[in-house]
Length: 130
Image 1 (spheres, rainbow, N blue to C red):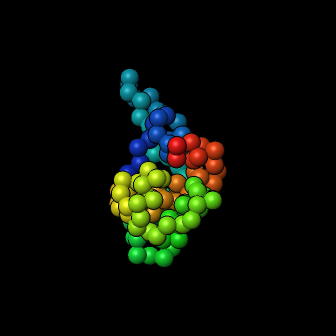
Image 2 (cartoon, helix red, strand yellow):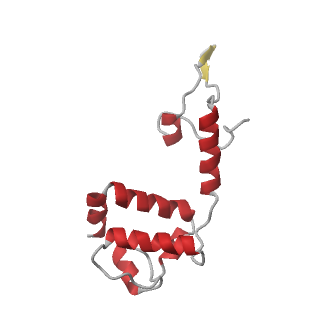
Image 3 (cartoon, rainbow, N blue to C red):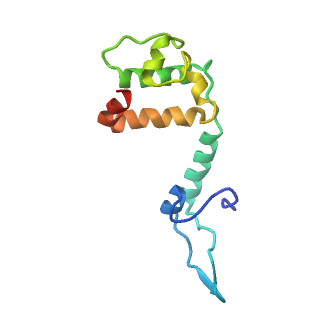
C-alpha cells in the first residue's frame, strides 16, 4: 500500500521525525528520498490516525459532549460544570459561549489532544487558563 501521497516528510515534519526513510540515492547532484517503509504495526497505526483525523466534532453526539465536560473538569476541578452553552466556557479561552464551534476545523481529535495535554501536563494547562 502506498501511504505517502499525503505525507509531508522532512526533518521538520512531525511524521518525518518518527518514520524511518530508506537511504537517499545519489543521482548526479540530486538526492532522491525513497518513500518510508512501514511495518505492519505502523501501517495499522497510520490507518487508525487517518480515520481519526476525518471525524468532525459533533456537539450532538454524547461522546463528544462528554469529552467537553471532561476537559472542563480537568481544567477546573473545583468549579461547577456549566451547560454546554454558557458564558463560562469563554473563561477557558473559547471564542464564544458554545465551545463546539471552535472545533470545526480541528475535528474531534483536536479535543482529544487537549484532554491528553491537560492530563499529561496539568501544570501547563493551568498556565493556559490564566
